[in-house]
Length: 615
Image 1 (tube, rainbow, N blue to C red):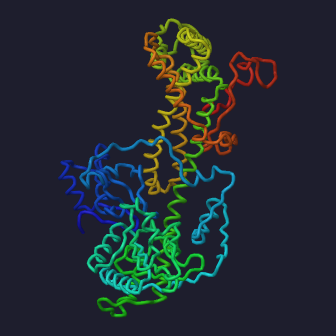
Image 2: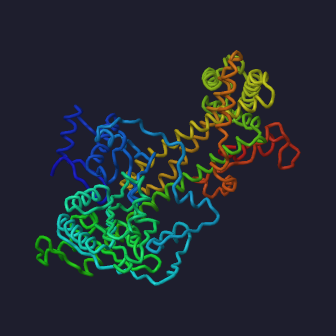
């Protein structure tokens, strides 16, 4: 019932029939799902997600008139990060702040493929054991547990489970008062900014002095953490304080039992719970930890299932009562494992799709590195592209060898030449000639026109201009390609309804997109070279700006893929998703590299060589 159904577990929203009718009436359309309304459906979907799946002070904060994402694992603000596909704009509209333009992806790589670029991988953390399977399957790394230097004296008490959120928070505040009255320092861990503010308000009412540490006031983090282990200190923090910090305690606090950790709910990941516990009892110090939970907590409500609810109801619990049960604790751990497995499958799925894009990324970055190499044969590359363009135009105009010359559509052919080069050539130039002769004549005309335009520059100037223009086209087309890949990835899952494997379909479609990208880079760069106009009256400042632009395009090599990853697989058995960079192609009249003594065009070049995608 209602206008839409919210699935918090899978974070999706589905419109009901009633909702669709209302939406169609609101927008004044007959069919919301017709092709021309596709963008409208997308915006509606994102608006519903923004209002029903994303909470202020939990998933994001509003700061200085902007939406800033809160990292769910670290609890810190993710400056500069924005949700994609219009979701961020939907959140901006929801909160009434300025709606900014959607960002354009310039480059992207998953963490997994980024780490795989290194020959050697290693890491150290206190909480790797719960993710041992993932480290093994994704990176081929084994997790080894190292014994503590001194025995752990911290007492980890069983979870206390309450029926309602109110009962739980009342019990947390009561326990804080008890510990504070005897001077034992307390660190209260919360899962969100919103929950930390709720406890802050209750402690204020009880007149208990305390510090609050969350993403809103992270600037004071060092100062707050420094004092968190002092006698009588009470610190309320999100999981940002549960990571990589040593909270020092003195001998007096050790006598009182050390730092007490109170967790106000279990996180979706056991790793984060373990990190919070680990703030206490460090280096052999005493300490204690305990989690306070309620049936209204997200983890139990969404993933706990009916089992825990039944256990609680069967005990006939009254308001304020709690249970301390190993059975319930085990059920909670099962729920956490279920969520972790779901997130792992999601990351694994993302990696499988990114592996497809990774070959393309390597090929593009390798070619970009080649362009930035002063020794790169840019002239040879342009000549090769010119030959491929002429072959493509002949094919588009359906001018083939063995076909009667009077059947050639020379008007169409010369129109295509004009579109790609701006050169006006009369169809009569090619009248009565065979396809091979037309090809040679076209190449001669194009080369002469090119030399006439660029012959006025010395070799160094010419190379600089050619590289600038080629890099411009490469970067622009690559950006467009990334957008196309995002669009493809968004809708490819629907192929599953047609009994097709979405991943296989994605590989095939993305390879076709990549082939089209390569062709565009070659032909659009040629088009730009032929159509560019030089203004020799340009002031000195503009010339300096052009030189500066080349320097900016020549990105520091540390920012690019390492040279080791420029060599791409040449095995053609998996050509559908393994593009490669081929060696430079000989000119048609050059001696054939096979050593036969014949011209290349009359030997290996006769049937057409296997061409690399980029070089």
